[in-house]
Amino acid sequence: MGQKMPLFSSKYTNKVDKKGRVSVPAPFRSTLPDDDQSISVLPSLVSKAIEGFDYSYLMQISERLDNYDMMTVPGQPSNPAAKILSRSMTISFDSDGRIVLPQEFMKHAGISDRAVFVGLGKTFQIWSPEEYQAAMAQDDEELM
Image 1: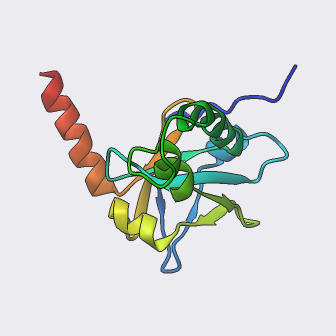
Image 2 (image 1 turned 30 degrees about the vertical axis):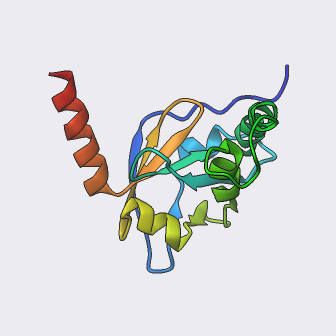
């Protein structure tokens, strides 16, 4: 049986310290492959959140974009690899299961002292509580 595919589910709110350290929820860490003590993140292209996933998912994105990018001009705004791969970072956990969120990512998501981790299956998002609440209210409104 091959490497297990992470399944991120549920929602957790954790404190963020002044250095930008935040504990990745234990259920998220435990779903990662045993040999991977890191996550990959990038500012969302569609919301005020940070997108997160394991490294193997980033590799899958890269492989899918390889074929598409043969038809685009490198460095042009329409190049999806430039939008995704150049903005992503892989961050290792410390001994306490924490990561340091990049300041520019925190600014993008409006994160200061708390972060909401939202499981989306193969991926997850990290939001500020206020932005997450606003996004959920908008979703609820659109469903009505």
